[in-house]
Length: 267
Image (cartoon, rainbow, N blue to C red; front, side):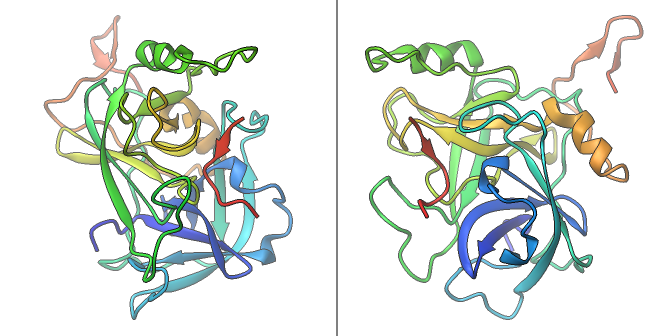
């Protein structure tokens, strides 16, 4: 499969969020996907699939054991919109089911870097994804936080504070709009080729509408939540950047250092 780390998260059998497989028993997604983290029996994770309406022979349905939402998350468009979903049993890796690499905090995702976002969400604010509901992919460049804040401050609704892009957020997309993640994509991965390694830079979090001018997609930076992820999944290996890529350096040793539209369908 082209995106073997992509998973779909279903509630009562219908798709509502994306996610990424990061170990054989953990999936990373968005905290806003789960208003109820205790009712794990409502949820299942679909892996190894390209078309939601035709899962095919490589599909695996996994039951959910628990959902850990980041305790710092405070509601729509706030920081820390990340959750970890533990599967009932480990999944077997295949060509269609493989984990995505989670970056070490030393990795830098520079503005202008071309990344990919994937999901089964709606193609626009109005439509739903037509059958057989094939996984969509979109190349998006990283936008620097100062530029993203500037874009979000343009044509802000009068009387409303423009949304600010916090330190643990990452913008990607196009100032002119037209192409973006949308409803049903939430929690899915933004992956970038750094050196020769594909790394997940962020998780799909929010945007104002979808693909609107001056409103690029906003993602949660995984490197900002390294400590929390490591606490929940101590065995997870974080991936350093490949050769030939920028890294933050430790100055002492010169060594790399160890109103909104939610993006899930309305109920």
